[in-house]
Amino acid sequence: MPLAAAAPPIPVPILSGFDYVTVDAQRRRVYAAHAGSQALLIVDADSGAVIGQVRVGPMRELAVNPQNGHVFTANGDNRTVSEVDPETMKELRTLELPVVLDALAYDAGRSRIFVDEDNGPHVTVIDANTFKVIATLELPAKKIEYLAVDPQTHDLYQNIDDRNAFAIVDGTTLKLKKIVSTPELQHNHPLQYDSQLQQIVVGGGGVLSAYDRNGNKLGQTALPRVDQCDLDASSHTLACAGGQAITVYKLQAGAAPVKIAEVAVPPGVHTLAIDSKTRAIWAVWASKDGDFIQRFNLTP
Image (cartoon, rainbow, N blue to C red; front, side, top):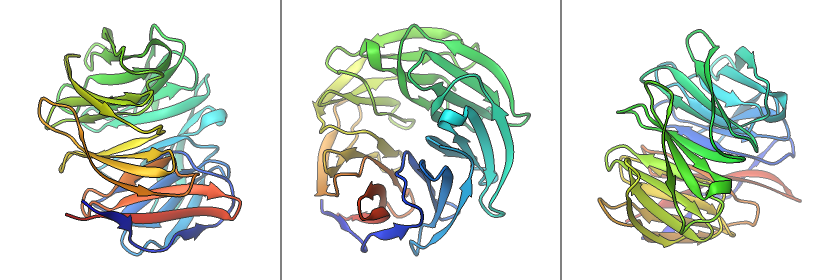
């Protein structure tokens, strides 16, 4: 299955570097954490044009509220979570927290924001309606990494870097259900959840593994050194960035993911997102020549 650049790289104003990326396929927007410029980058998902940037702080991660298109951002060293309206290009609300922030996930079914402490054990749970803290979870870890929410059970799946494991947190009680050991992985980093296949896909140390939502291992395959992966659950397609390549996998029911495509990219590419409408993959990176965003097409 070919994977190739759809157009030349698009320059992004303000040199700074990037963190996580996501796509609002319904509203045709690509969002990226333009970390050094302390802004949310907004790009047209059809034309590739840079629409603008909204300053919120040195953001790390973001998630879209599918109901209104607003974007929640985790603002790293600023220790804040923000809600941004990308139509008016304004920051609507900000919540201060006591820790440096990293990954963020949104449970639309219960209007809850989950945000990780950077290099720590805490997950803060925020009511997205009131923008107030519901709970602070302290996991048995020194360094948590990426996370995902099950839209059916509302359980939280949380990577634990220092234990080569992931945690399952009950979405109703917000209590720890279990720690799932992943001995085949090292320094667990990317994690995604496919709600149709009911699979948790987690990677680290050159291995990508699939587990069911009870923590039973389904299989493993090789994975390049990557930072972020993103999942298009409608097509069960997982794209991962790192090691100067974008590598794409197909998830399978009850089995390990299968590699289906790969394309070389600049050394700075470590985060990406999939457009679930077009299956295009959007990657961002910083280099000595500037900051860029680029679209790649995956074709049959």
